[in-house]
Amino acid sequence: MVANGTLLSDIGVSLLRIALAFLASTMMAVAIGVLAGTYGIWRAVIEPLVDFVRYMPVVAFVPLTILWVGTDEFQKLLVIWIGTFFQQVLMIMDAARRVPQDYIGLGRTLGMSNLAIVRRIVLPGALPDIWDATRICLGWAWTWLVLAELVAANSGMGYRIVVSQRYFQTDTIIGYILVLGLLGLLTDQIMRLVERRLFRYRQGA
Image 1 (spheres, rainbow, N blue to C red):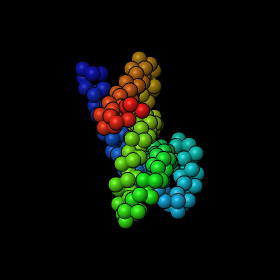
Image 2 (cartoon, rainbow, N blue to C red):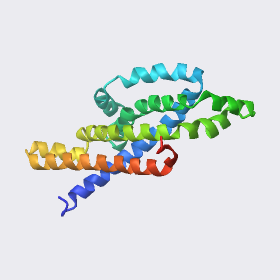
Image 3 (cartoon, rainbow, N blue to C red):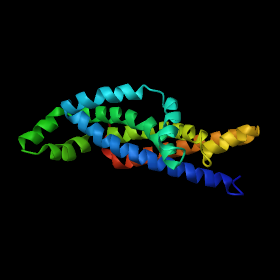
Image 4 (cartoon, rainbow, N blue to C red):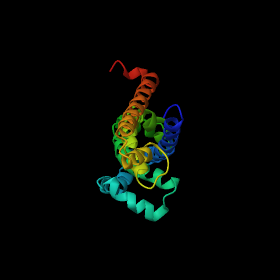
């Protein structure tokens, strides 16, 4: 399958899907999570809703996403987004809440606006924990990617597993599962490497 290009094609499709969906999920989660973690009024509005949705099984949303948006590419991205967004919001919100209040109080004493406090104090202070939360959620994104491709897909690694199941090609199924595990491990190690480079000052702690 490597020789005829099937495996590399499936990997490319799956990587593109997970990159687009997870990037959108992370950008939205950072904006909402930092806002909710910094200001109590936003936390009171956002946290109950996010807590409510995140306990719903993502599998149950798959048929609903097909009914809502059809079976095109956006449906696959939506499943990954649902599986990662709400978890990320809570984890990023907790990261923002761990920024010492003394820093925020100092910003107010210096006359900084709310936006400046978020941009120059809260976000840099919470960034290491936000990165760690993102790395953890990226692992979940691989799980939801396979789920999205198992249903109503015509390409990708999950799709290839379903096709192999129909023809009892157990070797192909096991091979693709191993490749998925290796890809997940590779992305996790890349995130760890970038984390060590970006936040060297935390290595001593």
